Image 1: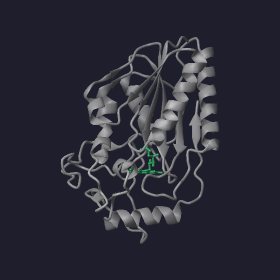
Image 2: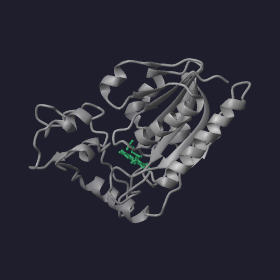
Image 3: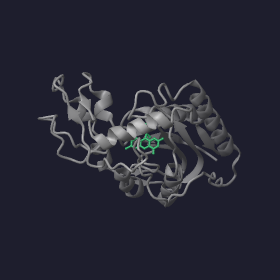
Image 4: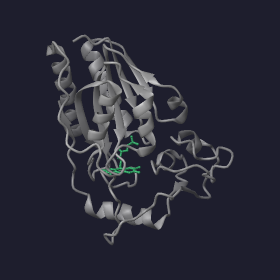
Length: 272
Ligand SMILES: Cc1cc2nc3c(=O)[nH]c(=O)nc-3n(C[C@H](O)[C@H](O)[C@H](O)COP(=O)(O)O)c2cc1C
């Protein structure tokens, strides 16, 4: 099969998904000796336009796992804003060392419904944005080695295919419910309404408002968060002063539970 162009298409508030998707897309563009285009749909302005692809395109699509599935606020865009048009796709999710549960199955199902033919898929463990200790330093060299194997398998499948290859089988159920976060006491914790707080160190540079993927922080007064918060931690991670933080008790209890129970190394997996 002929590939004319490779795209890296991703939502990545804290940057791990971007790292993996762009690395894989770059390797595949080099392998097919075709141009690479980056389509970053993290910020609201980027999602005002649809992404339309066509036969001959190979699109590496990436999203983090939130509560075992795709971030729910992004689902409408994956479903209505992206058109596959017969292009080939690789589905890639990242997760923070707990589990990816159903996110990869959900992304594969969205891509099939969008009109893509998925030829490879992967779930890669990355630093959990909630914590400095969970999967710290990941993706690491072993994860990138697995990513390179996924790239080689995808390139080989495409090169030898006379007709559209069958989609890979991935674990999970696209229609499963979201994971319910638990606290250190084992009880469910609801922190849907939690919003980031701002410490006195804030220098009002506006970075937090600029990186918020749902445009919820007031750029005139960054201590005010009038919109919804998806807990992505872009503001916490990008603040040059370390002035953004969460103090919601339910959130902190869930974070502590994760740090107690999920220190073992979760493996990155791929399917092609
Ligand atoms: C709201 C929210 C929910 C999350 N849920 C999960 C989860 O269910 N399982 C898991 O292992 N990691 C979970 N994570 C961690 C992210 O999937 C992980 O840190 C991801 O790599 C972040 O991607 P990014 O750096 O591209 O934003 C969650 C993160 C957030 C913000």
